[in-house]
Image 1: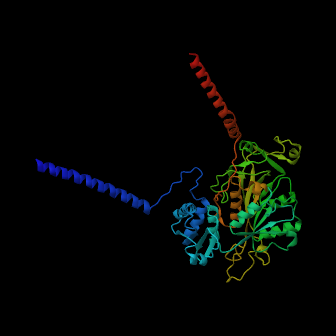
Image 2: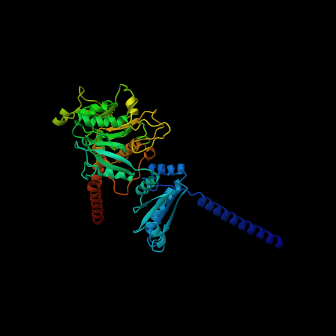
Image 3: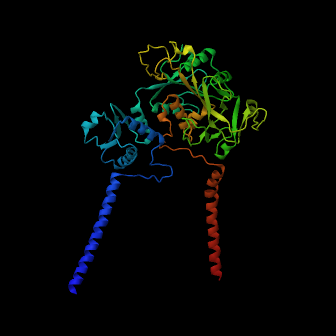
Length: 493
């Protein structure tokens, strides 16, 4: 009997030990799987720990090219908090692209490596891919992705801003200036220069995009001819118009499928978002590479209608891009000046109203193949064409040049005051990327860690005012009165 009890105890003890070992084995196996196949979940509402669509697209390009990325982060060993923050960001890139590797280096302990990588201040980060490298000192997603984009570029494309007719200045930091837009363009490794069309015989061959931002007076005939020649040779043009101005230029754009009117858009929906009646909110976009998967609202202050022509135009493909709300309408200049914003059936148009459109123009005329201005100038059959600036590579002179044109009815939507408002900057930069044939950069871009404006609806503004100013003090008064009456009643009883 005693022997049986002993065996029973051994059997039970052995079973318990085996169960513990199996449990530990399961824990070890789970830990191994987690280490070999890590997975991150971003539970923040704003997606703070998730890469933007553009960052993922840039990494996908590296993946397609099978080009490894090496990152050297030069941080002092004692700067642990900054290291941890950067490590978390770099891990997000590594999760998307397996050949993204990084290492932290203390520049004081490894002076040789710091000197080899030209590190004269720190913290600094060096990104390497192929034979190229980029150095940055700001460790955020926007800066890091822009540096990766530069590593992919084999050339610097030029964007020429037309001046001489009151256009918005790329160097102005005023509310209506374009310095913020210029800064973002240059971060994408484009070069921005100004051009006075009256002082040039032709638009330079290295022009990737011709930007005409908010002219206040019409170009002269000779200037329009330069623009036409540039379009005929396959150039890309981005036009930002203003209401009630440049009727001659608006008529010029009709040749490429853009219909405009001497009007300005009024939108009731803007008041719901805390804006002005003359700043329509855009939430409806027509599917196109520029607006594909674009689900961010944008705002077009003081905008005129810009729509695609209803009648087909030879060699032109045109479509609208952005539509105002159904509760919007247009008014004339006379109504605007008199302060009458009511809808007039005779002269107005009811929403949705197109305020941005895009066109492609194929020049099939014989002149497009002649030498001189064209990117399709006749070449020897045995010689390959080269791509410089707006001169997109073609397989020979047989293929006609194709121009790209984007027209928006507001120049202010890209101005300093509004550029960072919701999706304005992304919509502008997506247009630039499409015109420059950099479709891989068309996406929602990484947001800077700087503060962003919060736009409240009328009801939300009322709640923000009433709750802290009225309800909270009133609740304390009520509680005080109740306590006072209760104590008085208790003492009386």
